[in-house]
Length: 90
Length: 388
Image 1 (cartoon, rainbow over the protein chains, first blue to last red):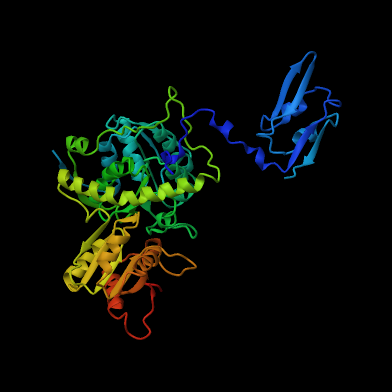
Image 2: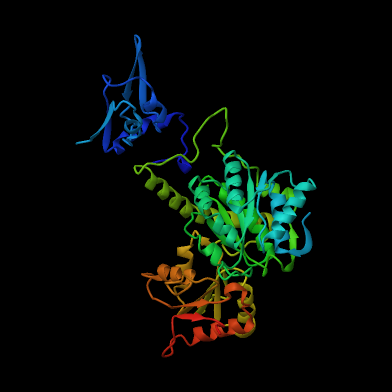
């Protein structure tokens, strides 16, 4: 295996290739029926793993499972109990 | 033209830094390295060195600054000692892991506690696994010359590792010796400007020192080991080339042999104390050989095996101790090297000169005498010399 000395990376944004979601032991599930669209999960997520898209008059929240490490901060902060942590099973 | 002068070892190092055309210096003063900081700072202030001199609040910062500067393609210099080297510990591994050709002089001094400003080699020996090349010098001239050689070695594409020049505190740093200051044009010929292929540049972004996941970390560590092995050849060649340009070299660059022909008793040592052994051997013990290890990292295993293969007794004298192992680090490594090398010489570990205790003529006589009695009943493997 030939590597650049010092592990230098010439390609920008290559971190996207390191899908760290595999470190997760629990996954957050968002229930959009309960969601009040406050955005707390998006604000508090330490790994930018909450995704938001606009559909008509609603903001729809989802989780980027490629990078979410399952810390549970979103579930803890959610004021309407819309996020539950579910054990990952292989 | 080269010119002769008498100077402290620290001044000799500063002259080398001036001649090497460094771009960035960051260092924090600590006894007995202080004169290196003062002299290089004055040279920068006087315009003799066209470098950025970054004043820092600690050795950790000094090493961080030169790492950052070196990453941009600058030729850098720093110097430290003892507690300062210990404070740099974290950043030492960063410099070597990033494969940056940082050059540093370490003025060897004992570590606290109890606090001691005096010389031994426990400081640099204790960072032997940090991935730095370590070259130990015997004289002030060698300190100057090795600093120049260090840039060539560190910057070589086959190496790309930081180099630590280890010189005995006070014994060299504060002792006046005649030193030949090389001619500037000769130095330019020997040491061209540093032109790395890869360096931090906003126009060509890259990540230096990124995270390595378990799928790649081990391979990068292995690359460091391979670079160290390649450094053996580079150090030899740089020493040869230095000899061609300046008319002097130091053994084969890795080890220096003295009076080794047919010697059954051989002293292995490191640093300035080799000079005392040479005197005693020359005047009183013509049957004893001396092998001075200049390069401790990479350890020149083949040279050691070849040089020691015919010896019956090998006495390794050093100013450090691996507490818990109960002998000197170099002695245990010499044993490791000789294991499986055919006929085994008796290998003794001599621990001496800790915390600045003088290793005088009588101490050296005692070491040689104990080596010669190594086969007598009750002769031990480990000897603390001049222990009260």
